[in-house]
Amino acid sequence: MTTTVEHPRQIWDAALGQLQLHVTRPNFETWLKNTVGVAYRDGEFVVGAPNAFVAEMLEQRMYSLISRTLESVLKSEVEIRFEVTTPEGEPPALHSVNDGHGEADGTLAAVQPPAYRPATLNARYTFERFVVGKSNELAHAAADAVSGRPGELYNPLVLYSDVGLGKTHLMHAIGHRATSRGMSLIYSTTEEFTNSYIKAIREGSTDEFRERYRSADLLLLDDVQFLIGKEQTQEGFFHTFNALHMTNRQIVLTSDRPVSALTLLEDRIQSRLAGGLVVDIQPPDVETRIAILRAKAEEMRQDVPDPVLQFLAERIHKNIRELEGSLNKVVALADLTGAAVSIELTRQAVADVVETAAERKIPDTAVVEAVSSHFGVPVEAIKGRKRDKRTAQARQVAMYLLREESQLGLSTIGKILGGKNHNTIMHGCDRIANQLNVDPQLRRRLINIRESLSAH
Ligand code: ADP
Ligand code: MG
Image (cartoon, rainbow, N blue to C red; front, side, top):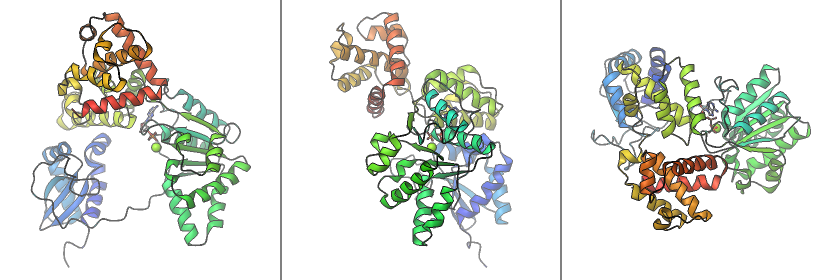
């Protein structure tokens, strides 16, 4: 009998199961969920954490709880070491943070195949918990309508957006409502659909596969962009789709690309998708971001002061998942340290995701130059008075970025941009903020400019 028969990964998963019962959900999500069991040898257990901050917090604040838990799982004493690793428990690539805790271990745990987990609806993804704003109201209205009268209105309904903006949430909301009305549904990720279709082909059971899918009132298929390049699965999808469509069963699909960009899907599938209703979700504006944070704080029964919500909402704009994650981190850090939720604490908790240009000391000239080169408008023109469309837009983008990235006051921005007044700057910033909601090209431009600035 030896103590190394079990894999560190399984040991740690068992420990996580217990730890989950002893810490609050935000704490679990923030500090523990993304950790892995990396190695167990000679009485030392190595836990992999996604970054140095988490590793440090676990070591400083949770060591004794973790060691007690691990010892009860292992039934022997153990020393714990925290290390920065990838989610697979491998040492990070060279560019990531490494705390210099010695060499990566060449004999790490064997990688286990991921456990098979059938997709189920997330209980939190309901209509009640979906905050509606300008950026998502169309998608919300369509989802709402379809869930009330499946198969009758828009078929298929396709939701598309960048990642983390609420597609899956809305899809599950449709599912909850339909099941609460006694309808049967199949919810599947496209990955799962692909796996079970391939399995069906291998086992010669495609008839049963089809029957299973055809029996549902609704089919919800998440992330159909994963069908791209999988011709065999596209074939299976096409037949399933047709069978359901012909009998007026509701089909709901999500994609992180617009249908027109799914160019590697067979034409016949593309035209089917375009025949339904395709709605997109845009990144939320700052009011919606604040409303989402507020709802989330209430859900956690946490009293988070408005300035903190504002602080987060102003700095995290691309992804709602990240926005929620940042609030989780703040609450978890407050919990762990017993400190009040303040701006200072918030800054500390989210330092790894939030880095404003001002804090990184990107000179305002760099912002103006980046805008100039992306728009092909000379710096003098941006600072000047010319009013042609291109120049005016470049100038307003410069205003917007100086405000958002550098956190400068309106009159300071006015001075930087060749002596414009406070009102002009305010108007310019608002205009860009509004256009960003409706103009994907402008959004892409801004992302590019921000990326070039962050490379500074
Ligand atoms: P996607 O599928 O587009 O990548 P998700 O649906 O998984 O995004 O959303 C990411 C996270 O953000 C989820 O936790 C979800 O609940 C939350 N979320 C997205 N949009 C909203 C919203 N309008 N109101 C409340 N929470 C939202
Ligand atoms: Mg999703």
